[in-house]
Amino acid sequence: MRSNILPEDLTQNITDRCCVGTTGCEWDGTLRGVVTEPIFVQKVYDATLVNLQALSTVSNVRFTPNLPVGSRIIRVVDIRCRRFFNPANVNDPRNLVVDPETILSGGEFVRDAQGNFVEVVGPDGCRNQRLIFADTTVCDDEGRGTPVFGTQRIALRGNVLIEIDVLVLSPNGRRSTVTLSANVPIAPVNAPIILTNFFELCIPSVFDSAFFPRFAEFCNILCETRLGTNSIARDIRINPETGEVRIDLIIALCISCEKKIVVPVQLCVLSTGFTEISPETSPICTTFPTLFPRQIDEDSIGDIEDPGRPDRPGCKRGFRGLETEEFYEEEDQE
Image (cartoon, rainbow, N blue to C red; front, side):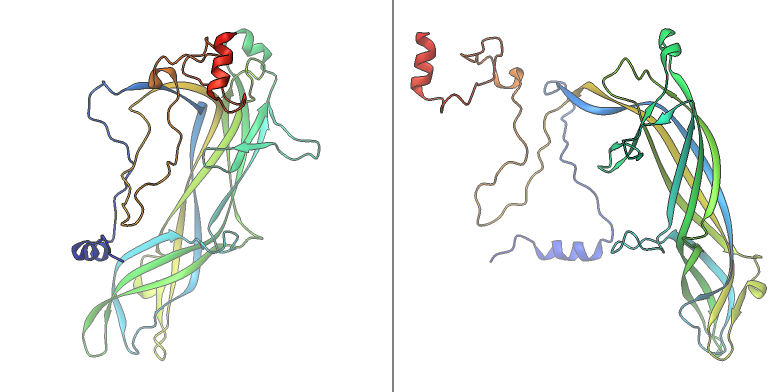
């Protein structure tokens, strides 16, 4: 089978460590092809952002690899920290996880008959948004939103990955840069780090809408680290017999949590049409199926009147038989 990948393409794929994305959205800069499209989305009614931080001191952490016997570290070049995540097991207890727990005052989360929170699908496709109910009558009469207050407890648990670039002096006087790494536990599952914060959010009327307002929250976490006392002599220990390296560290966990009140709405947006990505052609197949339906609104297909429903131009009525000529002849005779 012939390949449509040229040798220079193979070289580029190997040497390029990073990439750019292809969205399929193209616009010539003019308004000739712009049309209106209705979309069903979630509107942010109110939001608040909270930044939190926590410190964790870890001692006697073993780093790998071992240094040659008799070597010593003369300088720390760089220290990097990132959270640990195992893609093969989302429930791995070593995964660095942020578990927010929220309690409302002035409102409550909707529950089912078993007492479980009613959760709906969020923008990420997971059921992680809770429905909120509150008596909004007073503020509805004033045309304003109703405040609800919340207390949030954030539990941190899991591990972080730390890499340290050090300048090593070998026994023969040669200098080289070595990268030491370690998977460092921050807090176990049964003893997480707890952070607390308070917030206020504004919710719309629960009576003047077909949908209850929804509470959405999500967090992200970064970590920064340094030597415990910023001293190589005090914080880094090398076993003279094995070259094993152990280090004392201070790890700062930097957390951003955003809380939103969202409501489902329909918006009319300007669009340049449906997205079409240029496919990678195959030497065998000549045609391929479409992935999305075509636009069927009256502006796209013209004024084609439906004989059965003249008030709905551009919509063919189906499922009375097979729409044969006899069917349309009978309709014309009627």
